[in-house]
Image (cartoon, rainbow, N blue to C red; front, top):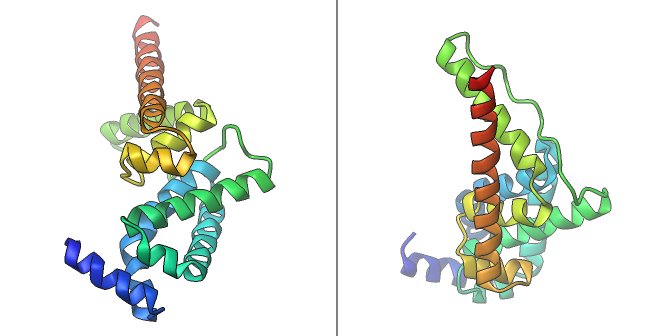
Length: 183
């Protein structure tokens, strides 16, 4: 979306125009949902968090309209709603993602399914702060500055959390792959 289009959207959001919120939803709901799902582990919980985030955004429409990056603001609102939901449910550590459909019968699809499951398992095993920073970076496509602001840490700390998460995933996935070759 071009900068001038965001400016027009900001003005419409400040006025509380319904169409502006619909446009914001169309542009941001996907990454908001993915961040919330990564944090909460279940589609229904993530949907609830996104719904709550949009209610919060509606109430804070003036702050949203004044945000430098409304997309990042909306994604952080989903992160905040998911964090509150996780705290209420006592889910601050690893979460189990809902089962995904079985891969197709082709060997390549089965290998992909196995790799995906291994990756999901290792993502769930990450420390909560690393998993959250990684979700905001990958799923939300936020900058380290935006992640740092959302998490109350410096951009360097946000970058470190993402880096440590990626290093841990790389190491664990390489070890599990190497382990499979030695058998």
